Image (tube, rainbow, N blue to C red; front, side):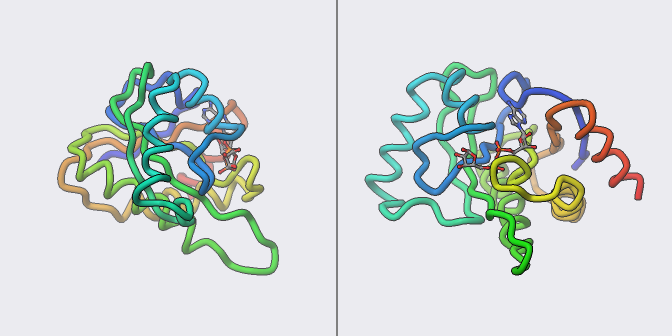
Length: 170
Ligand code: AR6
């Protein structure tokens, strides 16, 4: 699997699946989540509500991932995952790695060849950008999915892309 770093908006990516940095309610929010629901239209929220009424009555647990339609977006699926809120006193990085591993597994099960990830937890949830990139590249770099051929990390803004490229270069 090839890992690519691009600057951009996750909602405009021409890939099979995009990952949403959601919250456990699955009912929307700000940041990536807000943009996806706004541009994808109501079909996404409808499926999220159905998931809450069936499999995830208590919400989607942190670190897990579940797919819905992508509505009007160019992608075919949105894979919702819930990152951990950053903590300076507790190491929650295993949960952040779970987000990438589980989202990639769901994408692979769906038969997606290309998947775009935002920098989960690195916005409203406060995770330091450099470490968020390190966790993402660690998981994706070690993964050997059967069908996914490209994992694209979509960085929001030129400065975030620059940080990601520096982390990747070591
Ligand atoms: N495309 C790509 N990246 C983006 C975009 C976009 N359109 N918008 C923001 N980013 P965040 P979190 C970057 O806050 O930290 C929501 O309310 C952003 O700069 O979207 O996991 C949910 O409902 C940052 O680098 O997600 C949850 O309650 C990264 O994407 C909560 O926020 C993630 O920022 C989740 O917070």
